[in-house]
Image (cartoon, rainbow, N blue to C red; front, top):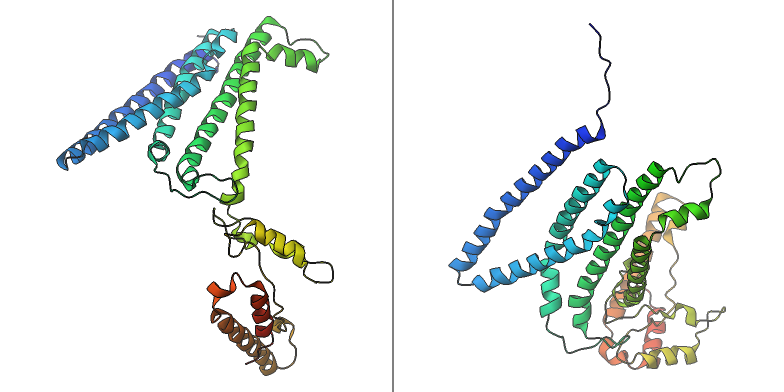
Length: 331
């Protein structure tokens, strides 16, 4: 009796159970979603708000289809593959990714409902002169769409490249000891890949263009700069010369450029306090240094909070005088 040595199953043999169980899992997930939809429908119906259910459902369905169509950018890949099994993998895998992409984007339906139905604020930002609603409603949905397009284009490029590699390897086009990088790149740069790269470039350019709005939206908390459309990322630190003297002309030009911003850049007052961390001596003396620094800061902060800031925000000379005065206060 001849003993059979163990062998790794052929890809075609492994593919059948993988495809079967993957489709089975997708079917289970789809069936599991049906009760949730019915519960949502009956709940809204019981309240007399069926229109809310159908509005949400239509948006979810539209996003599911849109994301699925984006993900189909990789479906032409099988035509470049030589292996029948790989062609099946690329087709089924592309459909699976399309379904997952649709499910992911459909979960963002509230974001897109706001983008299409948001009511303008009636106020514009002072930098780009756009309605505030653009930043609240439209911009998040646009960025999500561009992210999906980026993912879809990259997926298509990878999918086609895998298929192209299989086809070129089978044909022996990548053989030889000498590696010609230009020839290899040219072999992979089929017209469809070139179009996907072009699409990716357009999307990246759009994302770069939208990046300018980070001036108003980016969280700069670590830098101590307030974020939001009511502020600008401009501070007065650089408007002082090397000797610490304020460049008042430059200050006034910046202030006049943003007349609606009460604190477009900070006004400085020298509130010097000895750092108690550098105190030396006995424990009692070190503790006394910390208490003294605390009392000085508390006295000056209380005095600053007592100022009539609504009056001073447009009277810069008086504000400067008050800040200098507070810097001399001692407990």
